[in-house]
Image (cartoon, rainbow, N blue to C red; front, top):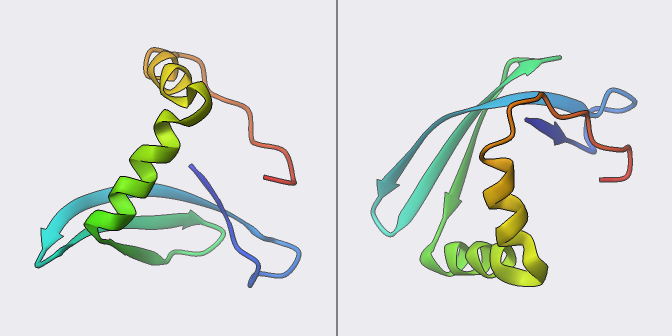
Length: 84
């Protein structure tokens, strides 16, 4: 996956991979690692409110159907445009 950061100057794109998701107390911890251009470990703590918001976004505007179709896509996607 591509992650964009505003703190890296001109080289603002990071390539990242999911490591794990785990429950810790009242939060879900999503762990990712970046592999290019730097090696960082990124952790995101999400509450149940955050998860409800994410699921709400997934179901808005037909996104759920596009997500379902993308699960079966076998080709490698192109890098997103600069303004994502």
